[in-house]
Amino acid sequence: MTGPSGPGAVRIRTATVDDHPAIAGLQAAAFADRWSVDAVRRIAALHGAVALLAERAADAAPLGYLLGQVVTDEAEVHSLAVAEAARRQGIGRRLLAAFETMAAALGAVSVVLEVAADDPAATGLYESAGYAVIARRPGYYRIGRARPVDAEVRRRSLR
Ligand SMILES: CC(C)(COP(=O)(O)OP(=O)(O)OC[C@H]1O[C@@H](n2cnc3c(N)ncnc32)[C@H](O)[C@@H]1OP(=O)(O)O)[C@@H](O)C(=O)NCCC(=O)NCCS
Image (tube, rainbow, N blue to C red; front, side, top):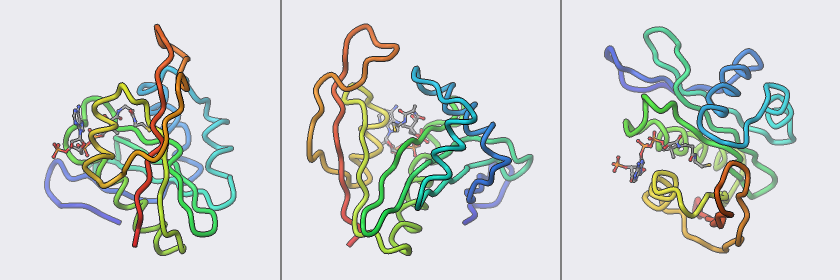
């Protein structure tokens, strides 16, 4: 798992325990429902967990992460975020694609995820990556919101 070369090159790799503080920092900067380093550790220790980190190749600055899980033939994205200054450069798409490749290699035939219906960046990313809405959970997101926001459950087949 690498990326293009050059001064702005971004590398995608499997995260280790040492990366959990960086992942927690990226998560807390991106979501109102903030996870502690311990919470990241617990998610990364789940059965079939996959943790990916995107970092600037030049200095290993953390730019994004994906936490997911592959259980039997289904994979799930638990959390994905890219640092604000690094958005819209294809990093989110690359993290998702790397996860899909790993999930398929581990035997998954589909990927599911939940996303806030009012988030154009996230829904735009998943829509463009082929994730179709299969269910809607009314008022699912409440923390840090003026009013409850629906979750879309989205799914993409890997076959
Ligand atoms: C959602 C998020 C991960 C996208 O990461 P990113 O690296 O900026 O996304 P990419 O550059 O790979 O964009 C891929 C595609 O997603 C869509 N997209 C990304 N940002 C968008 C935006 N602000 N508005 C509309 N569409 C957007 C576009 O289709 C884009 O392709 P394009 O640039 O060729 O048009 C990032 O905005 C983020 O961290 N948001 C906060 C956390 C979050 O909402 N996570 C997802 C919920 S689990």
